[in-house]
Length: 321
Ligand SMILES: Nc1ncnc2c1ncn2[C@@H]1O[C@H](COP(=O)(O)OP(=O)(O)OP(=O)(O)O)[C@@H](O)[C@H]1O
Ligand SMILES: Cc1ncc(C[n+]2csc(CCOP(=O)(O)O)c2C)c(N)n1
Ligand SMILES: [Mg+2]
Ligand SMILES: [Mg+2]
Ligand SMILES: [Mg+2]
Image 1 (cartoon, rainbow, N blue to C red):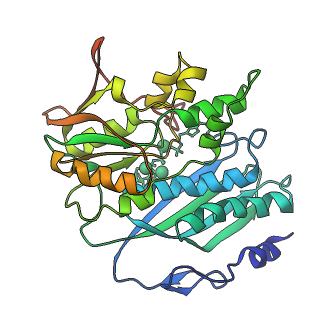
Image 2 (cartoon, rainbow, N blue to C red; image 1 turned 90 degrees about the horizontal axis):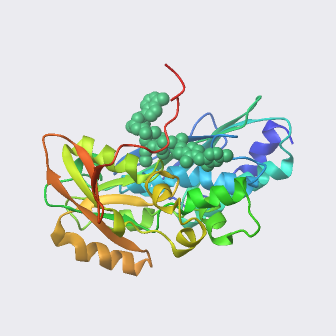
């Protein structure tokens, strides 16, 4: 399958979003809007973000789009479009490429998104780079800088499972946990949850890509606040605790790629948040509080005492000077 045959094969037969003016097939994509537009991009590189030794390309496609949908969720926007830029090595079969798109389409369908463009080139290392767009009602952007004194801190889902699944895939033991592997391969970004909270006047959100140790610090810095996290309240699945008792705590803080939401709200909005979570069958846990501070920082409190939580999540380019 060469470049143009691929483009013909992946061109959508129809578009879910009525605002599409010109989709795949011209020099660029055109859409019409009266709302604010959110625009995000995330890149996945073979052997950095995935290995084809342990993941089929269906899951690679799903996860690459999930990382983008998670950022759209973290802004409070409704996902709408995505475009896909591919650098493919010669060992990719036609089936691998089609499965990659099927994986993206599986998640796109759940979030009512359309594939509206991209680019295809051959190269020496596989890269899947996705750009995604979402809609946002004016003044309903959910920023890292919006945490306020007295807020409560919440997180969706459980943390560390993706890291546990990666461990199962890369260093398999005698038994494997299908649950953890599924959590790694097919994470569920919480876009419907976030976009459904428009009744709240203020909401601070960040998504968990690098690990909450990192994302909590991003909120603290952007908001100029002190975040207090209660270690014992951080939600960890029974499966992760049972299979990795020694690592579960650390992975929950800095394993990353959970694509859950970390946020803060005024205490009076707790019930609205819980109600929305119940409607969507999403686990929601309150894990701490926010206080005013001259020094932005994250404190981790436990029965053993209090420590400063450094931003220990995943960081690229660390090996450079
Ligand atoms: N190479 C770059 N050029 C321009 N802007 C960048 C670049 N890399 C990151 N940014 C911008 O920096 C900000 C933070 O990016 P970052 O990638 O840390 O966020 P994220 O997408 O939420 O995290 P992750 O990549 O872990 O999912 C965003 O506004 C992003 O658009
Ligand atoms: C084969 C393989 N090795 C390691 C990892 C772990 N990993 C890679 S990038 C990242 C953080 C988020 O990246 P970004 O900041 O680019 O969104 C994590 C936790 C993986 N998924 N697959
Ligand atoms: Mg990014
Ligand atoms: Mg993010
Ligand atoms: Mg990152």
